[in-house]
Image 1 (tube, rainbow, N blue to C red):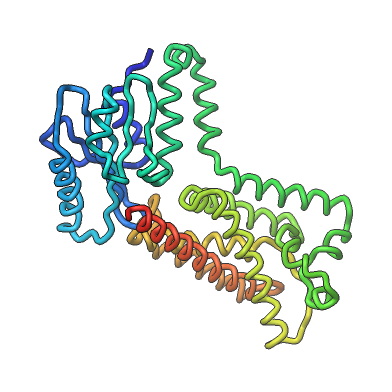
Image 2: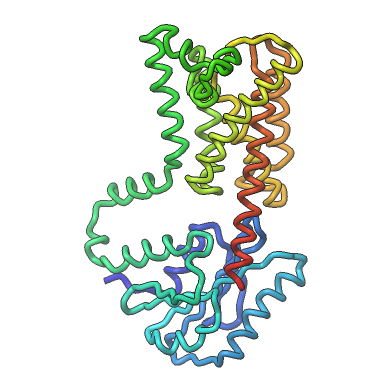
Length: 349
């Protein structure tokens, strides 16, 4: 059966994008990663080799970790301790007053979270439980074909919401090729139809495209940019962002036509929602101090500005929807980040 070692945990942390902080004490290990809310630190205590520390020493150590980062200009530092042990009662006594501490039972391959401790920390509950379950299966897992493991890793890394949204848009377009103008007449954005009570068009128009080029340009951006945003925000918030951005694009379009042009045409496309995803990406890059997954805030801002410029200099483009979408996407991402930060602060109390 596979053995749970500190080295195995360390490899897991590296896979999740954490870097190791040098330490002179082999029983105490530290790993950090930058998030939207600041620096997250995983503090691992190997409590299995006759080590004993008092509660006061434990508390002082965590205070020292925060002070280490504060001294380097970090305002937000969130520390989670994992106690790797074979005596869970001994570990429990050490961390019973710390809400940000979990116990990893190296004998039973279990993650122990007491009722006074936070239920999750940046998704690590699911990550650790899946990892420990895989180790517990031991030889059965080792005997599985390498191809199966590769497929499992691939499926786990797929951004499913982005993939589903692309698939739905493509399927709807294929249906349109066989039904002519039927879906366009029933679902495209049109102010006159909205005033007649067909408000559903604010939603359905997000999944209609006039031609293959229109569809292709939107779906390429949606899948690749959307995958990054989905990984950072999570599937449900990402889906909410997509829909709200699409709605905002149509609302901006409606306001533009009513207040400025008085020309009520029909429009369709996922551009408002896609620009919302790009707006969210801009916020995420800015929140990570201008650098995220080899992207800089300047590059993302330039890409958005260039896309808007191309729209304004082209005929037949609903530019108001683009502007509304990007503003809503940026705002929703900021609200989600603020909510996560507030929730984390309350959890720490």
